[in-house]
Each structure stands twice: as C-alpha cells, then as structure tokens.
Image (cartoon, rainbow, N blue to C red; front, side, top):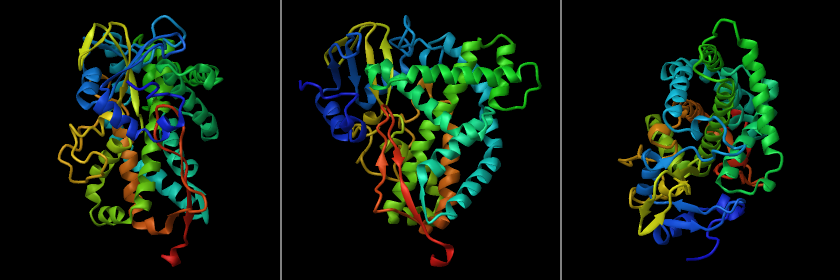
Amino acid sequence: MPTALIDLACPEYRLRPWDIYRRLRDDHPVYLMPDYTPDGEDVYVLSRYDDVGLALKDKARFSSQIQRDNYMNLPMLVNRDAPEHTRLRHSTNKAFNARLVRQLSGWVRGLVDELLADLYRHESVEFVDAYSTALPLRVVGGMLGVPLDRKADLRRWSQAVMNSFAVSAGLDPDTVPGFFEDVVEFSNYMEELAHERRGKPNRGDILGELVEEHENGALTRDELVTMAWSFIAAGHETTMNLLGGGIEMLLRTPELAAELRADPALTTAFIEEYLRVYSPTQWLLRRTLTEVTLHDTVIPAGALVHVVLGAANRDPRQFTDPDEIDLDRPNVNRHFAFGAGAHFCPGAALSRLLAETTFRAFYPVLDRFALDPQRPARLRTQQGSYGFAQMWLRVSPPEDR
C-alpha cells in the first residue's frame, strides 16, 4: 500500500482529488492511515458508493458523534446520535421545514434580481463575493436576524466551523490557527441575537422557532446556539460552492448553457448532476460502534472513519460515465452530496431553491457575462469543501448582446 495517499493538508488532495479517489476505490476501498491524527489515532477511509452508503445509514454500526471527551464535542446535529439526534432533528425540522422554504421563493427571487442588478453595474466583478456568497448569507442570515453589515464576520465564522470539522478529521489545529476562538465568537454573537428575542412574539423565522424551542425546554442554550450557527455554516458553504461552480460551468460550456436555456425544466437534473460530480462537501466523519469488516479489512470498534462523499459520487459501480454531467441520467438523485439517512442535510431544499432560482434567472442573460481570462478562476483550499474562492467575470452592457 502506498504511503500518504491522503494528506488533509495537501493542496493536491484539496483541489484535484479525482485521481486519488479513483485509486482509493479501485485499489484501497478501505484505506488505513495509521497514527494519522495529532492524538495518534488511526483513520480508515471509505470511498466506494456502497460502503459510504453503509457508513451514512447504518446507525447500529456507525456513530455520528465523533468527539466525546474533548473541547470538540459540540452539541451539534451532525455530532449526535439517537435519541439526542432525534430530539434535535425534531427542533430543526420545526424551525426549517418545507412549508417555510416554499414561502421563501418570492423573497429569494427578489434577492436574486437585486444581486443581478448589482452585477450589471460593473464592467468586471468578482462573482464569489458579489453573488455566490452574498445570496446564501443574505437568505440564511436574514432568517436568523443577522444584519448585512456582519457579512464578512459570517464568512469568517462559517470557515471556522468548517475548520472545526477538519480538525475532528485529523487536521493539525496548528494549520488553522484561531479557528476555535472564531467558533466561540460566533457562538457568543448568536447567543446575543437569541437573547434579544426571548419573551417576544415569534416572527416565524428560524431564530424565532429555535428560541421558542429553547423557552419550551426542548433545546439547551448551547444547542440553540450551535444549531443557529450550523444553519449559517451549512447553508453558506454548500450553496456558495454550488452557485459559483454551476455558473462557472455554464460559462465554460456554452453547449450545456444552450441546452438548459432551451429547456429550463432540465435545471433540476443539472443541479443534481453538479452536486454529484463536484460535491460541495467532499467528506464526512463517522466512528464505528462495533467491529466492522469490509473488503477483508477489520475496522475496530471506536475507529475514526473518513467517509468520502466525493469519491462515492463518482463511483462507476453506481454511475455510468461518472465523471460526466449527464442530464438524462436515470439515477440522478442517488448521490450523497447532502448525506443520507437520518443525517440527510436539512438545508437541502433551500440550497436547491437558491440554485434553481439563480440558474433560471441567469439563462436569459448569460451572454452578458464571460470568465475573465486575465484573472482565471481560483478554487478554494478549504478542507472538506469543493468550490471557487474567486471568479472574476467581465460584464457587457445590454446593447452588446
């Protein structure tokens, strides 16, 4: 077995993992990284579709509570099993339900139109900051009562939350200095917002529902706070990467853009295929509750397991021509981009709404935008995420169309 096939700190693994994923799936479906974490823990890596699905769905053999006895044991939905997870998920579903998402569609379209109008005011614009970050932060931040002037803080705090997941996976915390202080600052800020709402009528937004759950005794103070910033971190990260990457692909592949412009009903398939091929969240973590044997490899009970969604979503054992965007793919919804099982992402419906609204709004005006060849798009190096950090666009006036 080769050494150091995976290194969480390596730019190659963060930016261009596809060949590594293929080697993992084909040659090392259970890949052991001995003594990998700063604490000397072994880490096991699962990359095939069926094995990743097992780790995500089998609650009897795999636990989502990664950390138990240290400062990273945060009371988050993603870090809890039943019955705690069941209770927290009930509160999540109450605060963030399908009815609420449906009611947001008109407001979201208004925000999309407003941000588009802002893009038109420039001859050159950096899209990630001006749009793909701004839209999800305005939507989720607005639902939590976070003012627009805290956008820069929200981005920093959201990155700190993602860094906390990477540290739990074995990344040396010294490579992301200050992440825990940012998480604490984020928590204190959300506590201040929640405190302002206590004893007041519920506005019907996410924060109002969470405060009501807290006042009813269904959520502790820490659970309310971590759930609130989990909404921001998860909603921002996944949707930002989907929006930026989707628009980049449409501008880079005009034949695909023409097909979608001619038949906007294909947008749903485009979103699912983009999520599968370029999963915004590339991996999750689990711990084994019992000894698990896969592919003649024994994973001991209590082991840390690196569950690679991005590799599973390109597994040819599940998807024909897995590296290609296929709008007619029959199993287009079988990807794990939003997880699976009890921990399926509660923000998936909102992310899809923002993407659907964005892409449909851009189809008629795509020819006003072009990728700037003088400033090539740059991918993020954020561990565990896949998306663009910077993408400059040239904007043409309407008369040049």
